[in-house]
Structures are given as C-alpha cells and as structure tokens.
Length: 359
Image (cartoon, rainbow, N blue to C red; front, side, top):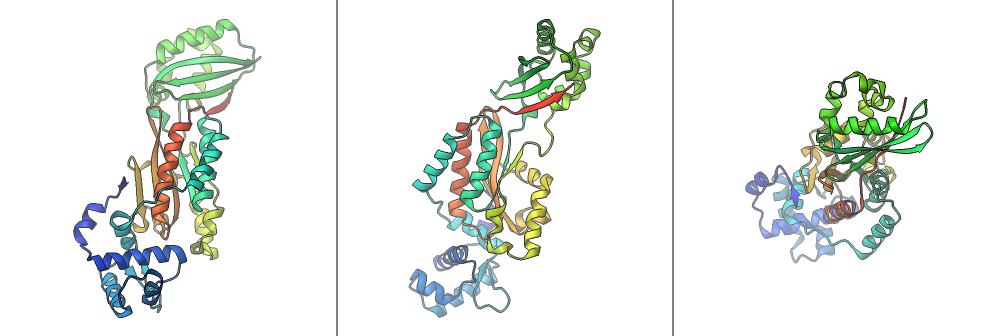
C-alpha cells in the first residue's frame, strides 16, 4: 500500500476526466522513459490514443493550468510537476509485477549472503542500487526499544570473550571484548548471574541510561567483565544515530541525466555525506510502502528527489529500506521492487551485529 500524506486532499481537489487522465499518464510514462519534454506529436505517434494533436495540446494546457504539468524554458513539450507525479502515483499508476529475471537475480544474490543482518543489509544496499539504478539506503532495526532477554558470554580466546545480547523479539547483537588480563570461568559465571539478574526484562535504552545504578555495588565493580558494562554502556546497549545505516553505491544514480552537471553531482555527494538527513528521512516513514515526491520532502536538500521506502521486520523490530532518486523515476516498477526486496530481507535476516570493545 502506498502511503501519502497528501493523498486524500489531492484526490478531493482533482477530478480528472478520462481524457485528462490518459494524457497525464502518457506524458509521465514518456518522460520517465526519455527524460525529454513531451509534445503532442509524440503522444499521437507513440501511444495511438485516438485524439488529434490539437485536442491533445488543449488538454495539456488544461493540465498545466491545474499545476500538473509544466514546460521548461520555451519548449513546446511538457514535463510532469511534483503534483502531477503525485496524481500519477496515487491514482493512475499500475504497480508492475517483478520480472522473472529480477526475481532470479535477487534470489541468487540472497542465497550467497549469510543471514547476519549487517551482511544482509550491506549486500542488499549494493544490490538494490544496481537493480534500481538509484541510491539505495537501509536502516537497521532500532534495538533501543527492544527488551533484554538475557546476556551470554562465549570465550573466544585468552583475554577475549564475546557478549551475546539476546532481545526478546529474537534479535541478537554480539560484541567482542578484548581485555588486558585472562578471564577466569568464575568471573564469567559471576558476571552472567549479576547482569542477568539486574538487567533482564528491561528496555535497552533504559539500561543504557541507568546502568550505573543498576550495576552498583562493590561486588560489581570488582568483576572486570561487569566493569566493562559500566565503562562502555554505549558500546553494548547504545545505538549511535547513523551507525546502523547502510548505503549502496552512488554510481548508478550519478549516471542519471539529472545529475550530469558539476553542481548536480556535488549535490548528490553532499547528500550522501549528510547521514543525519538520510537517517531522519527513513526513520520518519510510515509502515508499509511509502512514496514522497520532490517538495513533499521536508528537508530542503531533498526537494529535487523522490524517495520510495518500505519497512521490513526482523523478529518484532522494524527497519526501513528504500531508494532515493530524481522525481523522474519509474514509480510503477520501483514501488514493486522496494516492496519485494523488503519482504526478502524480512525472510532472510537475523540480527548479529559484531562490535569490538577493549578494556
């Protein structure tokens, strides 16, 4: 389902005739395909819509007066406005089926990826950029709202153990601990008992904020493993903004004609480097498939872009993936692609985020 904050008001304002709907849909289709302004002769020859060029021109003028089309410079051809694209996405577009070739390509790639979430998201970011020819961005599920089920410790080597943080939803986060001294079995057993007794059943964000009080006492401070929890809670329980974001290759997006000039190229690079904007953009999305077009994006830097996202689920936690590109994008194909990819991630991934902390 496509979610649009403007959908209800727009459908109320615009009651297009069948002719206007046909002309608008044809112009959007042709402009997406060619990136060139669309004139009446092109519509007559390519789409065989059974109308004279004069009738088509009059209808195009009506659509322009409504704010759904515009014409660049002195060109006789028209291009869709952001509002025109919105009418198209909400009311005129038929979502395409994923082609067998794309399904096979995606499945073959997924078969080669380990189920650990970071491996999945890194690879899916690259794959989605490649298949969509746009910029793919993925936000991992927000663990801060998860409830801790238990903490386990696995000895990896002398002076090195792994913390396994198990969330009740089934997600798992692992952190590798490097310590200056050897760790005894007794120390591991005591740390396991104390930490689980005092922290199990609590939200990770609450643990992070209140860990000094919850692990207070001389018995805790003497245990080197527990002391690591006190000294580095943000590494174990905190999720830094942007740390869980995965960005695909920007090369396919830069090949689009909209970004051929140096200024436009610079704008893409600046967008990619401003991770906070992208994080907030994807985290503000509604569940399911969502499309925002040009001026609908709240951030000034995103006014020339469209964004298609979908939520995916790992356990009880939701993440978001999507694509960013020019407003001239193949919405009918890309909505289906983003939705299908999100469902594949939901089936494939288990959360294992490996980090390293030293004491």
